[in-house]
Image (cartoon, rainbow, N blue to C red):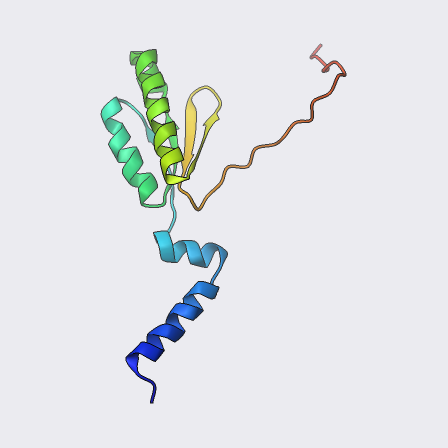
Length: 123
């Protein structure tokens, strides 16, 4: 009968073979998409805790922008530095929202080809 050490070794090998969604669940648990408002700079700790828990956040920054554009700049810079430090991803969604992802999620960005042709304009 195999010993405990042998059983654990088999379990570790099986766990390493898991890929994609299953592997991410082992590391982070379930991943949730949450939309939350960023009302104050003190909310940044909540944002960081959520991302560290493996959740994807859509931040509405309108409330903070109505109070202070300087605070918005400070918040975005702090979040960008945080996301880089954990190897996550961050992007702007229009003028009022920012999306922040943990390390196991990437934001797809379309690469637009550079052309010498003039861009069409709306009539």
